[in-house]
Length: 438
Image (tube, rainbow, N blue to C red; front, top):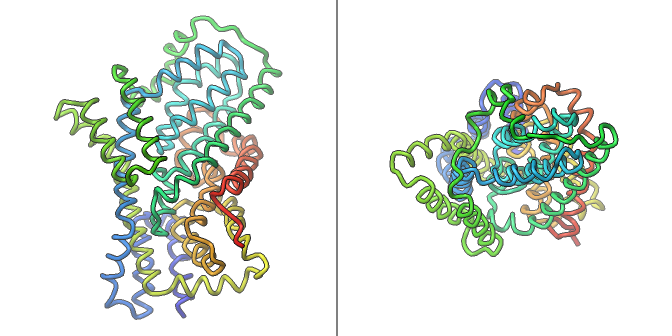
């Protein structure tokens, strides 16, 4: 009975989200409440929901202040010197241009917001692609790969945030062992960029450009699209760079919990970059519009998890799933989750996958002695494929910027993105982020 209620909760939630009947925030709260009441748990709903919210509160705090922090960094033009240096070094060579695209895309993907990342990359590089004659689908493919790898797997990115919150994990414990795999994936993206650049160089050769910056400034079409998103403050680049570097080092060394690190980093960044009180209020208001919706989702995920866990629906569903997976494959369950995440992430929204499927997979894995934190890491591996799927909202912004349709992009990008996703599983295994149970 509990298993039926649990699966019905997930199916209803996925139906409501995927058919746009309700927003994810409303659906993730309404769905478990309905079936908890049907199951006779109505009297205890309040305590169950509060238990779940308490579980995800640290993640909600982390996400809020990470988005605010990187919003300030973007507005301050932290990555602008890198963009200008790329243009300076490329000199019309497709190989250098595409490799530069990969480096810039990996850096701006730290922001965690796909739309912002695509805006910055396209505003900096798309005019150069057009001038040289490089296929814009190359830029789109590299951008999607970078976003899926960095933003999709870091704990302040939307996907990992959902995984951490829904499984009640510690963000530092989740992230630190995953850093080597992310770095390996980033290196693979740069290698892929080199191969794509070589193919473009063979097709069009090296174009010697003059007055490249003027050509960018005169591109009225791009300027109209992204003018409001370009960084405008260039005075504190070095301070912001050193602050961000210190924050990353403190994160890796585990000097303090991630939410605390980002609160401190945000306070310092806001005070130095925007000392005026009125300006501070304006900056917070501007960047909060990106953070608040996802924070709401995290709190909703806490309610969802609290109800499913406290009613024992998850335990019952996991027991039923274990009967499907042959016992001999149990030790490889983490790899199975990584492979399952590829098609599911492509076809499903992150809300549906992480709030619906991942808790059940994690509970099933626990029967084989596999830590839920490894299931969370395996679950985010499908993010590069999700970033090119139809449920990824920022993708539609990217396609509009490069003036290509979804079908053409997916035909071009599918193979390299699948290869990247499979390599991420390999990298995660080699570096110990995920393991085979003994």
